[in-house]
Length: 447
Image 1 (cartoon, rainbow, N blue to C red):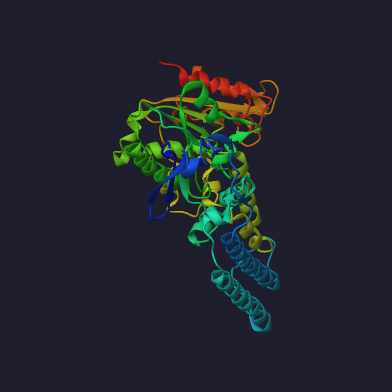
Image 2 (cartoon, rainbow, N blue to C red):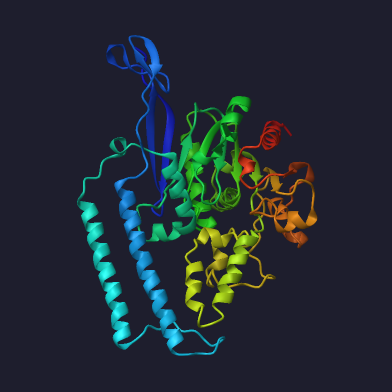
């Protein structure tokens, strides 16, 4: 009877305690009496391998109900406060551009708003207490999380992730790494972008990680993180997690390559920055980083959102509505100018519009690492105007290539290590054949 082999590792990093857990998953072998789990995805019965029944998937868990109910209560309280502030400002009959206030109403009107908040908190506390009393089945009983559930959680964390974590909401995503396949000396770390997750590297049947495992012998390791945190928060956590990963890797590591999409590229750059400052050993194994649509110098969509905040706050009649824009996460606001260092925001409100001539501190590319950049443009042929204003729909071509109007802030990525894909959008970078061929050529090229 062959012994059960541990062929996959699951790692979880829980912020902010940075507790790292390691879980071996037995995926191969044979149970007593000639029946049991065989090769991954198969089951042995009398020495014959049959497809194993897939574990049930869950679209909703009890913790999701608790987390959603908390968000609903918080939203009700927030809307009540917003309406009360608008009520108070309008009742004052100020000038259109007069100074807004955050004061609450008084008298009977104030009593009504206080009553709404009191009842809402009471109902919310009762719902949460009732859900806590229900039995909480373990993950096996609850079923594996479905791809649809994971996609919703990733999107929610991208928008509200910092708030979810600060309020201890069970919907908050912990950082973790998922290894796919047997360990080799060639590690490929894949870092996803804003509002995405580790499963979404697979699109329309293609996964860059799986393809590079088959074509170039890499072991894919997929990063999953809460993209609502500051980029620097996720970068620091990733740096520590990679240090633990390489220290525990079961075979000697020859090389580490990072393939990063969108925000994942900024998180990876910040991880290198923190690792160097902390004296970590894993950067010595890092050979290459390939950036896919990474907004090195920010995204105009977030800058546009910042302008909307500014315009709404200019009048007391609309100032309360500016709060709606301020629910967006720290991760999103970091994309305004590609901010990698949280220290640059410590002395000011991250929602306050900063002058365009005061960009965040520059962070250099990691020393001794070959860096490559792929940009996309929805234009079918080179167009200065479309590349600059539209790019791939989210990130301008110049930002994805690390180019900046200030030569001192342009990232030193050689033109031979840059590529622009025309007629594709931000998410096409995850599945287009020509993009993969460029990636494969770069990571397998020996300088």
